[in-house]
Length: 435
Ligand code: S3P
Image 1 (cartoon, helix red, strand yellow):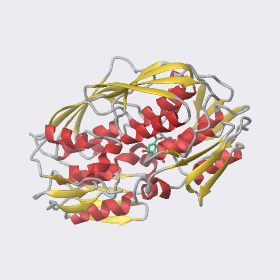
Image 2 (cartoon, helix red, strand yellow):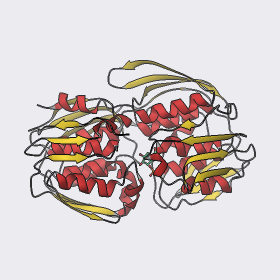
Image 3 (spheres, rainbow, N blue to C red):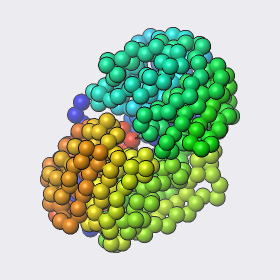
């Protein structure tokens, strides 16, 4: 379904202070674990994005009581979840809708593999195009049966109370796949192991510990023992560094800019964006918080503009910046140069992010070359602006907006409303940072 368009005018600079919405990846995990824990949980600063609302909607469909309370200033909502224990879900009366959220459908599938009933999960047009074999294969090896539309949603998960543990090496580095297997493993009869050749975000591992679970990580292998019970708890979700990335890039791009980002997550599996921005020339100061909160470190990041340089992102580095690649391409349109390889996964995100990104930036006047597994942007010429299509992809809508700030004329972004999937406040924050 198409969403509203936005017109973004150029900006000479951005200046100000931002508290990004609660981290999307962490919000999903806290909600899912709270639902299968014993006792109540309070999740403070839960993401305001539509994706995390999809996770709550699916949990309600499974009989979980979820209450949402007052919004914190810019920081999300507070969510109370009454945990039902490891096998307390009720078979849903109808198909569950994961909306646009790959994290919801893939991670929830891991939990549903262990529930002894059938659940059907679907999503929007984009989600129904995305590959699910990556979770179907391991979850079926563990004993669940999963029907799909040729490896894509809708999925019907026939769970079982007797899952077998597996040793599994995902074909693509993916935290969602790792998490689905670990969450199923939590209910299996023995120890489940996931081997990672390239490390991906470790929020599930940290969240399991916060909920009183045991998980070990050594030499790229994450192991979880089955039969554990989790305990409900009170957690604060740090601000989302993937949402903060738009302002970090805007401040790096525009002369005389300075943006301070408060209470932002600094988990080392997510801070690749800081390394890349520094290599491209940005002046970044990090003030780490006094103590890590519930296993998830957070702090304050200050970003100031300096002249941009060229850099390359290697395949090993890709999982750490996978969601930031569109906005890093936008950065390179402001000067400097960026090439990326080993990022073929971008083609199976909310849109084909390589082709839709190249098409949009080119329409704005960029010099961008598309490759099967990446792209190359040369920023020597200034963008002129124009009309672009975000393909209902939140990260593209916001990346185009950041590119548009450096153009000579305005840019109309079709489907800009997609930003609400992770950052509903994005366009109003953008206006507040113009200086
Ligand atoms: C996510 C993992 C990544 C990322 C997505 C969120 C997660 O996806 O792109 O936005 O929360 O685990 P993959 O696991 O498919 O790489």
